Length: 110
Length: 114
Image 1 (cartoon, rainbow over the protein chains, first blue to last red):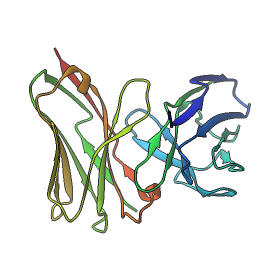
Image 2: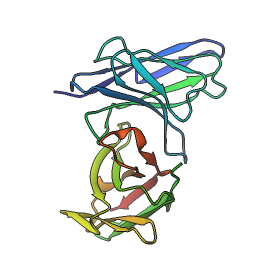
Image 3: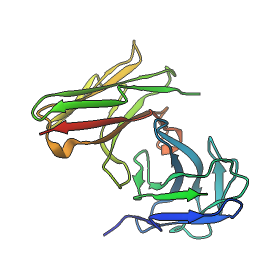
């Protein structure tokens, strides 16, 4: 089955540590996205990539970094500079206007 | 930039009743309005969308209406069932064939009571 795979489903880290969230897609989509979901705030765009080896900041990129070395993969690193990292993170891909989402990673930083 | 407001934040209905979720947008250039459904523990999934050249679109029990003059659009679910319980997000964009411009509303938690 084609789709987006995010791992792990739950992630726990201590404050001050960087953590990398995995996102893999087998839909052959050029564009990939990372969103952050907080209660009552909808989905906010962190980073997006329209093609391999290229990515752009979204609306809330501070404290995050990404790479796009392969078409299938778009990992997100939450750095220690992110002031409020505890959230639900969603990865998505698209071949046009429709977003295809993974099932998310819930990150808890204590 | 675009701002999308969504109401209500929570909605409870009896099974078989209708549910309506409303969104307003600020950018008159927006011309594409999708709705996503997020079930518990999963990512959102597109359920219906509408473009600005259309006033209404239906797909079985769900329909979306658009009022460009007032800059608001609504999701209507008829004959609700327990499996309709989920979080629903509206979004708006100045469509250019890319999902990059999508701005999401804050979401509505719909609960269908048996």
